[in-house]
Amino acid sequence: MKKLICILATLLVASPALAISRYNAQSMTCAAARQAVLSQRAVIFRFPSRRIQGLTLYDRYVRDNRQCDPHEYAARAFIPTKDDARCPVLACEPLPEDSFARPRRPWIPF
Image 1 (cartoon, rainbow, N blue to C red):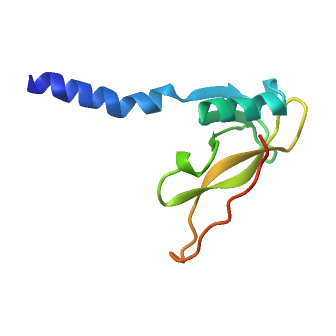
Image 2 (tube, rainbow, N blue to C red):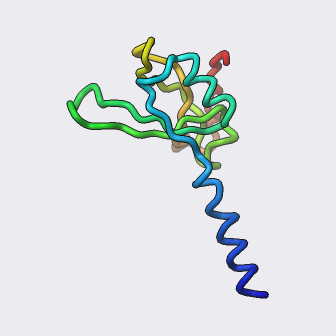
């Protein structure tokens, strides 16, 4: 019985990490990328680096602050998509060092 509980606990902990969708941002329109974030709450986009040729970047983008860790907040970020070089999305960023400072919630109309 203990073995079954341990296996179930492990599966519950691992399942959110396995469930996140991954997309190639350059094969999507900006509207499709934003809709993917909105409908799935958090996704991973990959896209080529602008600074280093041949380097592929990966990052996690979220719908709002609730998908970030307690010490992070959702900040505006931009990804290159098929139709927009600066498609606005949200990415988790660390909270400022000042623990009393409240981060401003960015507004992105979805």
